[in-house]
Amino acid sequence: MMEASFSSSSSSVASPFANSSQKLFWIFKEKEEMIRVRDNAKLRVQKEILDLQEKYTDKKLVADDLLTPEEESIIVQKYCGILFEISTQLGYPLHVKATALSFMKRFYLKHSVMEYDIVFMMLTCIFLATKTEEKFVALANFLEKVNEIVSDASSLTTQIIFKYELVLLQGLEFHLMVYHPYRSLYAYVHDLHDVGGDAIYMDAQTKITEIIKMTDAIFLFSPSVVALGSLYMTHPDITKNFISKMFKEQEVQLMNQINQLCEMAATPVEKSKVKTADKKLKKIRKFLKPQLEELEEQYSKQIAEEQRVRREQKYQHRDRQQQEEQRKFL
Image (cartoon, rainbow, N blue to C red; front, side, top):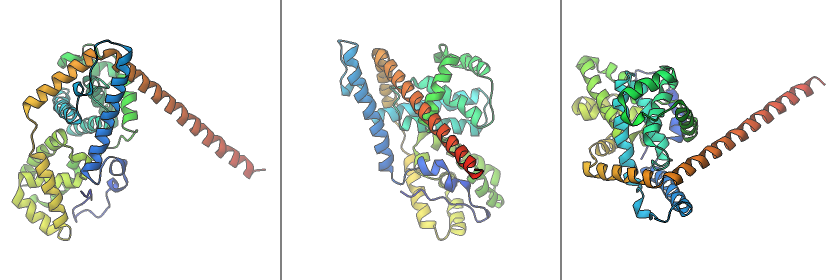
């Protein structure tokens, strides 16, 4: 699966996306590679939980009692929908919602919903997105508004947000810039102004948001391809003609990617599977509370140690630079 980026001929400047951390670290050339990363993370946590429970309880869970990678993906998808609804109620603009969704999907690609309370992490993703997208609100105000609309957030405190934000940043590998398909969509629709630009844009914008929430497309396709795919899903004839005209040399490759994206977007999750996975997660987090708390503590210590090492490396680098500068004047 190719992740090539395409832009309209009306744009004469190369997109900064080409050299971004998003393209380098968060888009996979093959779907199998993404699945392998996700499965390895879930299997690691399963093993850690099963090993730790020996210390805490006589009643044991076995591997089949824990969430499968598929069930974890179903839960993340469910809470992505909840995240979008909460962000809408909080009055945040679309780019903040999309960034929060991307943060949550990236984090749980390499971590498990059994490790960290997904409600707390979801709300932390929203809060971090308000800062990275320059729509920051004071944490006290954020918590006050959240508690008005989220029943599960009554125990959420500033300390929990600070703790989860550090874990989230580490899980994102501090890659906070997110390029969304909406910008590419705007450029494409500008070129389609003579065939009803505003209506086309709104239809495709809604489809993009649905794709971000409900699929793994952000890990497999560039924002420009997702934008074209959303156009094709909402206005296929117009988009096909547009691609033939503007991307003649890449048409076959583009249509192949778009067809893959369409297939992905057309595969809904059965409601019964969502209910089963959610029930299973609640049981796990209740039954394995001591083990999960120890896992969180271990990861927090790991983060603190990694930060200490980075600080030391930074200071050593600064000291070397200072010594080199001093030698120049000797």
